[in-house]
Image (tube, protein in one colour):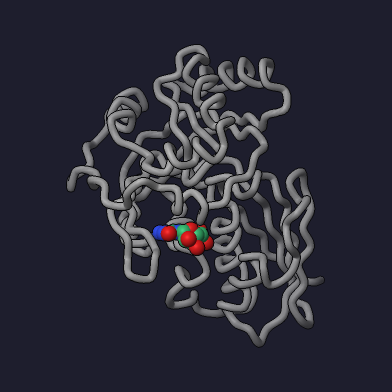
Length: 277
Ligand code: C5P
């Protein structure tokens, strides 16, 4: 029987995203606390002659099935001489600030190193700044342009993710940023007793891309208002370069109730309860 390996590409959430500098090549230096959802894209791969990519699922529309897709680039990074048929089930909105492409690439690297019995590539950040943290796949502090990843201990964070269905271009958001020189997070992150304590501390930090993204996509403000108004929301913020925003809650049942409350008022939005770890 044909051997098949499976992969999971969870949504990546930037709980904080401080932009703290800019390199001469234009890439921005970041200081970001990142966590991962329990929802994400699903992948499958089997040996084939040549590289093949099929994309299915609720968010398949508009996703390239060739070398423009980070899955393809990840496969070539592992070994450009080997072949596989890869199926990507797109469950997450794209161009959405939740690392869909980078998380798909990280899952592809994990799948194909197993399928082909290969070593992981030395510098996965060359295909995307978020790929190293997505390979880690657990709460982490991300610095540099994304290549410095240090593990962080966080309590599980019940959350609601909301995307209003507008895609936002990451380079456009960086271009609209007033200044790349903003303060870092404290050198030492605190230990949090529970989700409530973590949410209080996260609320005092920032996403420096939120203001420029809001000027490009005013819907983001409507989403943040809806989250902030949802019953028992502890804090709400945009993730990455948007437009997806998250709200944090003290427990999972409250997050599920809030997700239902938002979905009823905004039937066209993507609204998902989750737990971030
Ligand atoms: O790495 P990724 O493909 O997500 O980056 C998309 C774009 O976002 C880059 O081309 C760059 O314009 C901008 N970017 C940046 N600094 C980073 C990450 C991304 O300026 N650390």
